[in-house]
Image 1: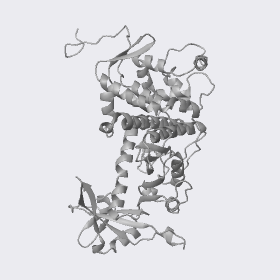
Image 2: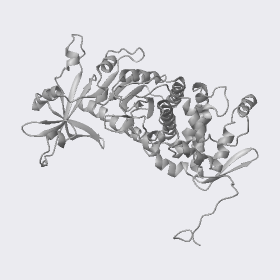
Image 3: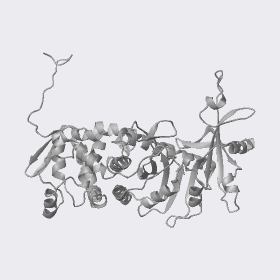
Length: 499
């Protein structure tokens, strides 16, 4: 009897033979080894320090590799476990570089011998439970619970990763993009966010020059994005490695917090001094009034570079004489530059019964001649208006694309349980996987792959079929294709180990 419509059939491979569908995944183990990632996790996290069973690095690295391979939930670890070739590599590489004493200590962690390469889903849930907090979400109030010492360890492991990248590709300037993202969920413990659905809302700091997640704070969905943003920004600054001489900050209107702006402009940071910023400001009734008073001759086109030439866009910008109430009520209030952009809205016939507010989901301003889309910016930069605007708009590309990748390409969009601390640990493990892949693309795969999505990397590199054999105390991965590429990748990683 045929199995389907076409003349082929499936049969079980009963001999095992070390087959793997993840022939390219071990190069990420190579990269993690070059970065000292496993040692950093064991040194900082401390959930299983001097205990029994799986070590911190074994659990966390299993979840990191699951993220990179395309898994999105704890049960997907079983797919890794059933991959015979991957099992051989992962089991054998865990002993690499360890002394005889360290190997004996690892063996004594088990009362009974275990032949698993990665932890079982139940073992991972027990591990994540160590990150749990004595905290019950309460709707109607913005509460950010304390961070456990174990979660701080994951953050420290990420700081070590940042230091490694900075050592390989030094940067003197750090542009920090502050932005929050909503993770929609159906868990009963989740609270409703401003968009009307249950969610969690991490606030992230993105390091634009290095293309890495600098810091993140996992939050309930009802916590506003701008809530205590100054504290999170200070924590992000503390994560910056040595060699950074100056810092710049960008944010949407959630970052329009006067304590944050004052901290940057006054140079209150002892390490970096004055921090230049550009932040979207709310288009309030008073701001609209100030924009309407701008003379028509004071509006200038926004210029962008295209094919090496400056080209005028349809948007226009102008300096706005605007002092918000928060700054005007004291004599010591700061003075910032307020800019406005406008863009003509093509008139369309409105449907009966629809007001202007219902028709457009963005702020508008109507004059005698046109109706405009309005956007406001506050900055302490002294450069031209077009330069400030284009610099701020760059934030919308990289950091928001990173949010999409974290939730769709990695496992950040599907949280494992209802526990807040457990979900926070899951989010941070995803960030380690995200940054590991970003370092791999930047330092090893090259510029050709810098903008490629994770599905392209999995299709071309990670899911290379192969066979893993062991001969003369050596592991050999035999691949049917892309052997030269894999050898080139490993040689580049070997050079990074020397640095």
